[in-house]
Amino acid sequence: QKEVEQNSGPLSVPEGAIASLNCTYSDRGSQSFFWYRQYSGKSPELIMFIYSNGDKEDGRFTAQLNKASQYVSLLIRDSQPSDSATYLCAVEPTGGGNKLTFGTGTQLKVEL
Amino acid sequence: DAGVIQSPRHEVTEMGQEVTLRCKPISGHDYLFWYRQTMMRGLELLIYFNNNVPIDDSGMPEDRFSAKMPNASFSTLKIQPSEPRDSAVYFCASSPYHQGVYGYTFGSGTRLTVV
Image (cartoon, rainbow over all chains, first blue to last red):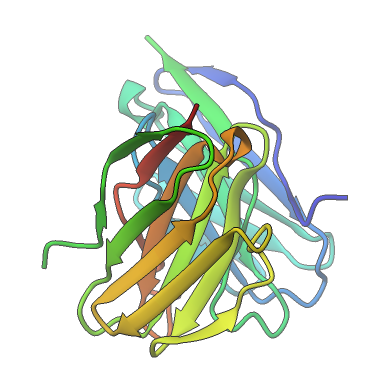
């Protein structure tokens, strides 16, 4: 079992729709969770982080965390073509020492 | 700040040659990370440093790989001898102590091709 799992996609949504990206992790003691966006040929950039169970909203983005079920999700409202990218889920494991374990990413395509 | 600076951007080398990748982290960031990204395996942590000291090198695939951080503003990742399976994009990233608010800042990466 991979430590951080994501569906590779591609996930296709129409412009203006809600995109839902999911991630599960194996280390039950993990405390910190991150979503990075990576455009093709570019480096990853941080979108959001979440520590506590529940929802955290930032503009069109909402991160959701359920530690009991060991999953993290990212919702993108009013999806735009510019949101088309690969979204990487990252987890700081127990006793992590500031290092992150990344999933392989979900490719999102927002269609006109 | 210019961000995390990596060089070279692209490297094509022949199997068996030595390859050296370079990274300049953001000033004031205590942590420096070397990751490798491939389509099959995604982003894999190779090694990371805290205040120039290597903390965890368990991700370094084998003895052909070595990394150094002689000072707070410079790190190298060396592969000797290189093999075709080392072909990947190598990212350097830095972060402050509590990375949560800021996350990692990644460099632009070095695309390595070993032929």
